[in-house]
Image (cartoon, rainbow, N blue to C red; front, side, top):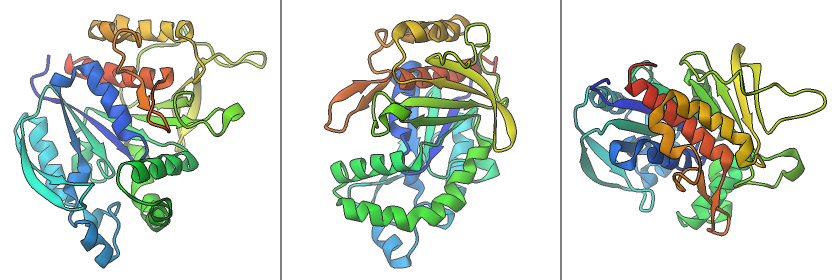
Amino acid sequence: MTNRPIILGIVGDSAAGKTTLTRGIAQVLGPENVTVICTDDYHRYNRQQRAEKGITALHPDCNYLDIMQQHLSLLRTGQPILKPIYNHHTGNFDPPEYIEPRRYVIIEGLLGYYTRGSRNSYDVKVYLAPPEPLRYEWKIKRDTMKRGYSEQQVLAELEKREPDSDEFIRPQRQWSDIVVSFYPPKESEKESNSHLNVRLVLRPTIPHPDMTHILQPSSADSKPAVRLELDRDMGKPVDVLEIDGNATSEQVLQLERVLCHEVPNLMPYCSREGNPEIGKLIGTTGEVLQSYPLALTQLLIGYHMLKAATGHA
C-alpha cells in the first residue's frame, strides 16, 4: 500500500454531474476514508465582484489556480491545508477550513486540469461531458431548485458563460484518463435521469480492467446493453464502454464480477443491493432514483482508485 493519499480529479462544466458522481465514488471507497474538495472554493472574486468586473467563474483569472495547485501538492504528500470556502447560497466567502487529507481525496470542479502542476497531482483523472442540452436542463433544475435563481437568469448566465466554457473548460477533456458522457437513448430523448445511457471513453493512460472476454462488439443483428468497442477520441485510439439505461442486473453482473475479481475490496459494492447509495440520483420532482450506468461508472472509478492505492496502477 502507498502511504500518501490517492487523488482523483473530476472536472466538468457547471452542472455536468460532478457532485452526483462523486457521492457514489465516496460510498465505494468508504465515506470515512474520503476527503472531498470543490475547486469553486478557490474563486478569486465573490458573486458581486464577478458581476462588476464582467468575468465568469469559469475564467482562469477568476480563480486562485496557484493556491489550488499548491494545495494539491500538499495534499498529495499527506500534508494539511487551510482551504478557502465559497458559499454558493450567499455568493460570498465563509471562514477557511483546516483539512487533513484522508486515504482518498476527490477534487471536483471546473479548472482542475488547467495547469500542468495540478494535472501532475492526480492518480486518476475523469472528465464529465454530457450533451449540452442535457447539461442545460440539469443546470436549470439545480439552480432554480437549490440556488434561488429564475429559469431566465440561469439561461442568461449560460449564454454569458459559453465563450469561457468553450475556451477553458472543454479543452481539459484531453488530459483525462476517463471521459464520462451520460446521454438519453434515441427512443426517449427527453429522459434526464435514471434511464440515461453512459459512454465511457477509456484512454490507455491508466491500465483498465480486461473486459474483452465478457463483452462483444455490436453486430448488425444485435446491440447488447453493455458494449465494448474501439474508437478514437480527440484523434487518439481509445476503448469505449457503453452501458444502456435499460440494462438489467443480469446484463451488468459480468462486468461487476470482473471489477470485483481484480479488486476484492470492491466486493461489498458489486451490486446495487450491496450499497444502495451506489447509482443513486435525485429525480426531477425530488424522488430518489437508481441507475445501473451511474452505479457501474462509480464502481469503475472506485476500482481505479483502489488499484492506485495498492500500487498496481
